[in-house]
Amino acid sequence: MANNLKLYTVLSYILIPIALFFTFLDVLVLGTALANPSALIMVFIIACFVIYVFSSFKFLKRAVEAEQIQKVKTKDWIKVNAYVSFFLCTLFFINSISVLVSSNATLLKFIDEFIQQQPGLPAEITGDFILKVLKAVSVLLFITGTAGLIHIRTTLRLVKQYDYLFE
Image (tube, rainbow, N blue to C red; front, side):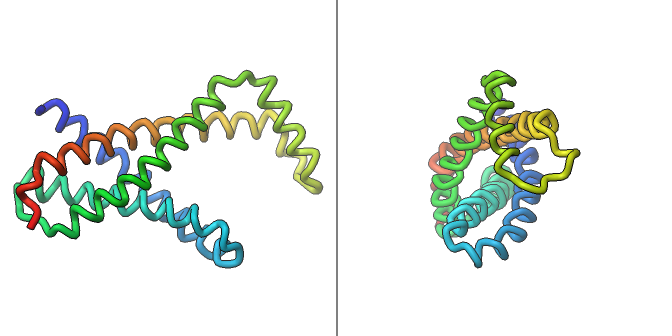
């Protein structure tokens, strides 16, 4: 169990900067999403991930490590946001895998079709440039998705194990 707790702690510290970055993106997208209400669902899902990361970190520090009594509300925040975050991390994982296993030729075909539909793109934005960015983002999303899925599974197990600390 000690090794699992060490891995959980490491994953928690990995997810914090990712959550901070997502917070920044979420605030930026919120303004745009107010003009396009269908985009609000993505803002909500990202916000759930951010809330999950910080509430689970609070749970780790206060309940698991210090064994302090926690409010039931904390447990509810963790669980509800964990389920939404599980959905998001699954999407990250599946989408990144699909990009990373696809051949460059297949991806370039889709990228070239996209570029042709975008009039006025600067000459610096080429298919190869977009492919490199897409691969880099896919690696980051793969790491985020994998770390998130493992973290969520462990969090839900720890919440059940430390249930006696919630009043």
